[in-house]
Image 1 (cartoon, helix red, strand yellow):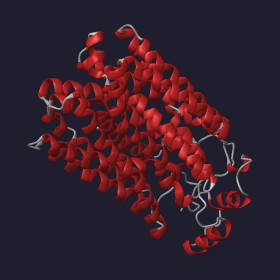
Image 2: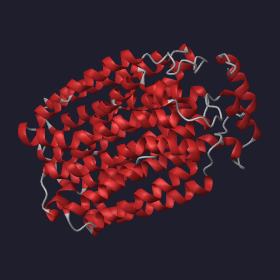
Image 3: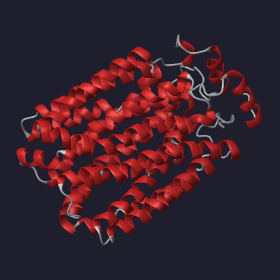
Image 4: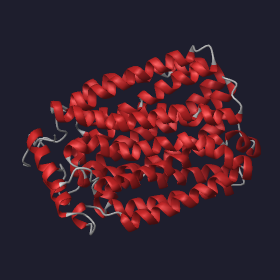
Amino acid sequence: MEKRLPGAELQARTSTRIKPGRMGLRWGMAVIFFIVGLIAYMDRSNISIVAKPMMEELNIDKVQFGLLTSLFFLGYCLAQIPGGMLAEKYGARKIIAIAVTFWSFFTALTAAATSYVMMCIVRFFFGIGEGPMYPGNASFNSYWFQKHEKGRAASALLSGSFFGPVIAPTLGVAIMTAFGWKAVFYIFAGAGALIAIVWFIIGRDRPEQHPWISEAEKQLILTNRSANSSKNKAPWGQYLRNPRFWAIGGQYLVVLYMNTFFLTWLPTYLMEARGFSLQSMGIAASFPWLALCMVTILGGVFSDMILRTTNSLMKSRGYVAIAGFLVFILGLYMAAYATTPATSVLWLTVGLGALGLPFVVSWALANDLGKEFAGSVSGWMNVWGSAGGVIAPIVCGWMAQTFGWEKTILINIIPVLGSIILWLFIRPDRPLLKEGLEAIK
């Protein structure tokens, strides 16, 4: 059993080992993950930015376009658990470098596709490429960050992911206007290949393997992290017999379902339902994603602060997630009945921003409860999330085409209420494994 340190003692030890003002190598690595997430989500969201000209050129309708995003998430879903297990076995450095290179190649092929069938195949393999990213990051975080830093560590990749759609609309429209819609994919594919090289040069699986880390920071991490160096396989039998393990996945299905709804259809909604032009849409669509990015960063800090103060994962993870869901529901309801385009964007910004809270605490919880098996636990959680990503584009596209945008937004409040109930059932303060009764805070 690891020795627990009271907050004051931990603070004192930290201040003696890491000088004030020094970021530490682990936070520099988190910055790289911010950039990886930024590129990954720009690659995902660019297809919604170029939707109109691409749909016209390939002669596809809304349901067919939604299927493209669903195929991405199908591939993404299939790669989650294998990606997490591979990261646990071979390390996050290799797996993430391979994943970024793989998906960047298929990002470029998105522009090269000459038919709808070819586009479907490309987007499926693009999803497989992105699949190992989050489980690999979870595995990395379990070894590189202290127990009370998991929220902030998770927010690095997530906030980068959510900052991608902030700049993607404006940047994507600018590139598309100047060079055509295909150039958007070629340029971002090149950026992905570059960051894969940077990550492989700088990244290491564990702090004790990195030649650049100071002895003080290394000892700080080794003393206070929750993961050990066990090479045992994840105990899937115990996990799958635990109903709370299923609830973790179920609530995240709704999180990614709603995120994918925004990612796929927000630009189209703003132009069709709210009358934005292509150029003004690029600016308006960035505000909800900027809010999501900022709340994800601040939410990770806030959640970790509550954990250090209360030593309760239910208060620091569960109640924070529930609060985010409640504000998200309010944002959707008000956006649906907004009387002006600007007011609609305002409430969509409030709603999507609030979704950052369940996002970041879900990934922190996968680390809290998964420990050295965080790659497998987070992969399981993201399989469910990917299922939500598969469903959302097709279902929401069909609903918008059949019932209109207002009813589509209001109907989506129902599954969010279900996620709140699931968080009450998860009870994060209890370990997932019977023998894992040691403190996780």
